[in-house]
Image (cartoon, rainbow, N blue to C red; front, top):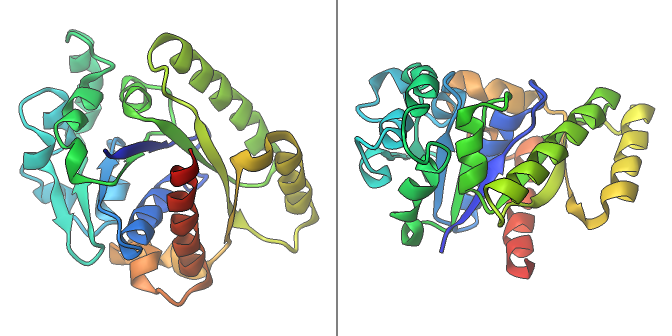
Length: 256
């Protein structure tokens, strides 16, 4: 049975897509079967996995509208070692078209049920806004991985996300919970980041992953080559941190 996780944060620019593609590549590296679902119309996670969004015959748009199954639409990102259910600009129109459909917030969940036995992990890259697309992701998922920078405004965004998850849990998906908070773009030389990191640990305890992703130039360069950092430069500090995080994810799932 596949474990399905959203990578979500209502604050933009916190590294959701970087986290999704590198965690997918890290999990593939440690022997897991992975499907990465791109729910953002910008298609950055698709391009960042080495898949050209402009050449997709079928995308997550077709899956949400029921004109294709996940098995048909997913493509293998060969260099990365995982499958990609990609997105492109078509997906922006899905917001409007989903409104008229039955069980519009459960379309992705129903589609993923058909490939449940084919994967160990399904990672969903959500847009930064709370849209019908994000809602589909949250309704399909068993849990949420929250990447966040250790800065003051990130704490405010986190409280909004926790409230959203509580509402979805209460009304739409009783399985949904926060799996853990991942500290990203971390620079230990900045006192404020250390302080916020300590606050997170005090408040959320073991919900904070032990792995910390450092601020790393190679991770930032990787998308311009259409690859996750883990594949682009496996020896970089950030890449090694993501592989460690993937191992921690596998261990954490075993204890859930």
